[in-house]
Length: 207
Image 1 (cartoon, rainbow, N blue to C red):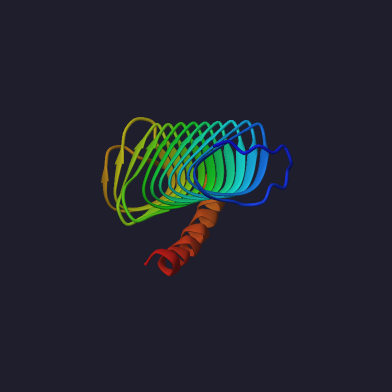
Image 2 (cartoon, helix red, strand yellow):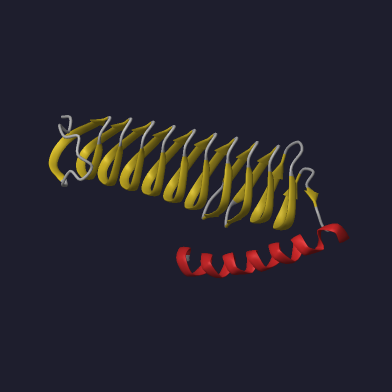
């Protein structure tokens, strides 16, 4: 079913198994399956959400897929972002290709050609041609042609051309270009303060 209004303040739509929004601005949507294309939505609650070339404020669903789309906040079990941007993500599994986000709280993350602020994870994190200001996880971190300011992990595995300013790991497999010289002393101080703050936050929110 497609919403049939062009107004920017459409009231919440409830008890629909499927809602498709195209070229419209919707306020609140609740349904089993929601598709938003060339439009926008404020709050979305559903089982499955697809947002393509559109935007949304808050999205909560079992599975969320963003394609050339942007959202303020996403919460779900499986979140997939392709050429999109998100301010905050809370998910069990996060997959991002050519995207950007500020904060991710997840169990598992896989990023390709993407840029992130901070990733707080319980499980493994993979960075492929990606940059992250901070990655803190209880699992393993795999990096290939990627860089990070701070990495805290059980094990860090690296491929080619990967660099880290501050690395705290029980084990390191591969070559890591860690920057600790005099020219980077200021950056090291900032990174150390950041990791302490994030560790405290991680313990409060994930443990």
